[in-house]
Length: 161
Image 1 (cartoon, helix red, strand yellow):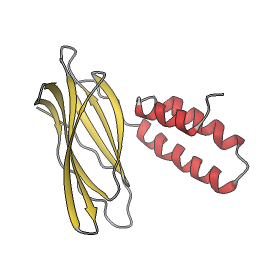
Image 2: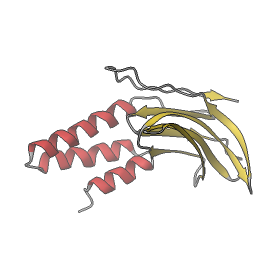
Image 3: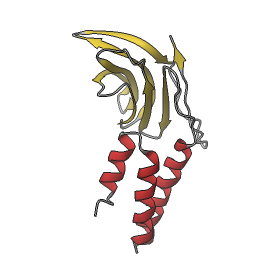
Image 4: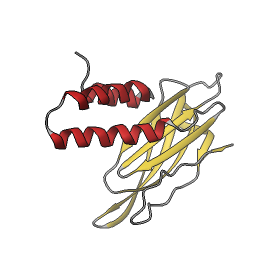
């Protein structure tokens, strides 16, 4: 009843990769259209690759770029008040390179989210605490470059400050 792509993606956004993979596998076995099955299997493969990364056991931040998606995982100290994430998104447009800063209030001290950005080039991110207009970083990730043409390794980094 709840096995839909929307539900699977909600699981992904909440960091429940195993549940999302299970939903996608059930969907792939039930679909008769070959192209839809291949698309679902490709998503399973993408999630399987990410689920093999060791979870963050200490304060930290990890960013992995896959095409136009930035997968951001964070873990903040238990006493963090007002958890927030700040990302400098760098993307390619027909007019050249564009940057934008996004600050998001977080609902938990650890988790995972996906930013979908057309023309994504790279992301510089920090997780920390937000108080009013101020943001205090506790963990940062250095900027990550664009993928090399013809290769598709996952790119990630972490730097705790």
